[in-house]
Length: 503
Image (cartoon, rainbow, N blue to C red):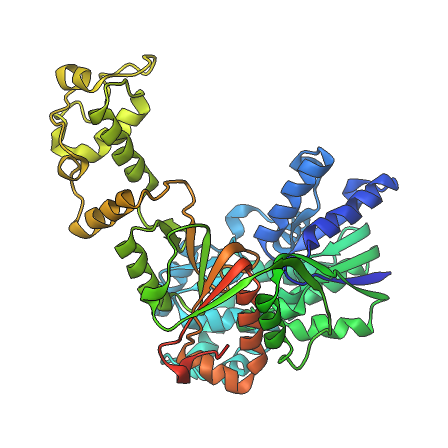
């Protein structure tokens, strides 16, 4: 029996799947006979973590909650040393006379990435299971990609891996299918199915051929990785093969009113999709539009700022730094947390007569430069077992040479960073491991959410050209963006209406 579970945004798809796992465990099915797979490590890890908590199990007791790549790796018995690494790709590039700095499979979304366009085209052709020259012909390349060279590199990469006895992640899936090493499951779950490529779909079919029951979960409306080889059309076509199609009907994220209405207006433009309705929350959300970035006020609350490409976020970064708002971008905080904590503790330490723990003092010392006598800068003269030290003690016995305010005492801070931190302190911006403002591409934020979402509708020239060929892709992308908002959605007017998604 095969069932599709459609999970619109915020409807609790993972919770629903784990509840089903719970039902099967209660019915006496061994956890080792349940397979739960996703293409992305993020989704697989989240399911494993929640399963550990829900069922009071350790990860080693749940052997088949993992990514498709991880399953292939395990079942084939491949050693880690045989997996292609960035160094191997660089070596390959040197042999072929092409520059390759990086090449990797993302831990977040499982997608292959590289600074080399030839490698990216080769990978897309592999996951889409089409000849590399056909993949080349499918796109108008902005870079100077030579068709003949692409073909030669594709063949040479095969020879290189064979010579070095190496495999990549796509090889793992192909060998899994060819050797038919799939375990037999009583129950099989495939999560985030809308993002599977033709190659992953072929592996999934191998898996469900040996499963008694199969649940395929996803949401075609949130399929935004077609550019990386994902095949949402296969997911949609499955309705003709399965026994049931169930839709989760209540969103616990999306508020009622204008945000829900806007999201529905966008997604109903998609021509090929599962028709589905779901209820938003009873609470009404707010929709605000701005003509200029200076009108945006993110001084309070949790924010997610979304754009179709990273460079569109530059104005927002400038605004955050001008206003003193703490943010993260590309997984990095706008200012190192250690530096902010060092400044905060330093100012309290020098203003108030109290002992400071040794680890905090060492953190401060790491930013004071020559304001700590050479030989004392690592705090080796302080005893970790002590409750702490007063400022005067450190001046007398541990090399400290200043009581100045932080922007005079701390060494190596450029003017821009200093001014930004001053603005943060003036605004009493909360310092934490995770800043309250996150700047991200829409692709990078898939699965995320925030009380407040600021959306930039600008798109690249390449996206405009893609829109002419496949307008559904942009509709889905901005649907995903709009449906990240839990309370309020803010839309900034585009800089160029000819290169924008008009919402």
